[in-house]
Image (cartoon, rainbow, N blue to C red; front, side, top):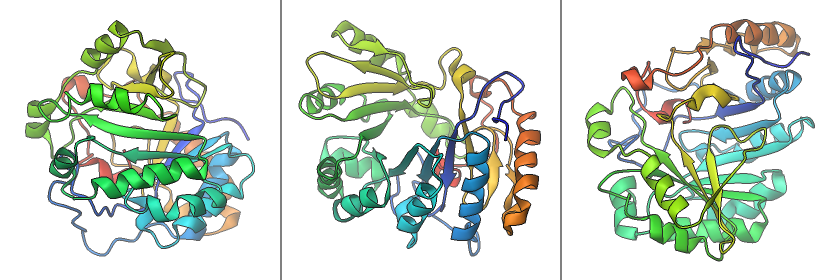
Length: 326
């Protein structure tokens, strides 16, 4: 099968697969009022997920990240890991989690085939962590990160959403934390969503300010690998860990886009901030539908735009990041 390529020559080898919208945290930049279901959610079943993964693998997908909401809330989370691992052409299996179940499950998930894990950790101060997430689980998440290190994950990343007047002064703490830990810490610029204009206006801060401070302290920019996407990564000879920046408002951010997203209800999203999604679920019911599913993927890529429209304040239909998996 031919590789997924859009009209701008970008190849898509990375799938971010949401398996649930549900989350048990109440992060101020995403779900400040907590998860509120719209009726009874009908998320993709395990068999539907298997068929989806198999189709994407046939068109060149090499990396799959299992996302949410909080993906580990699914009772069959470990079965989903197995389903990805069973497709031999998928080289990298990753997940993004708030870390609340990590301490008890890191070894089991690793044994199932999970190799990379991103933990949302917006502050190294327990009180500020609770202020941002709405949960008093700082120490629990920190123990989970240690458990992931002990389990042998090949890459552990800490995601911190950069928030002006909240955690933007935490950079020295994070840098010091990396001194003896082979972990990536990434500050992610706050992105405006449909429900977050006021919050965005109050707390958005350009990652360029952090980049300038890193460069001034001797951190060196690293070239990304084929599946890394648009993150800018920095290393320092005196530190075991790396620092990264994701800056969606920077120039040419979308030029290296290599990822597609499928929501927990089976909709293909060509961009985090555009259309309402293209339904794939009708083609996930039988194995015999694989060819038709793959053809739909190829057809829809012709609709992908060259860039998002965040600079114009156009956020699309995305109301909050938990609905697509970020």
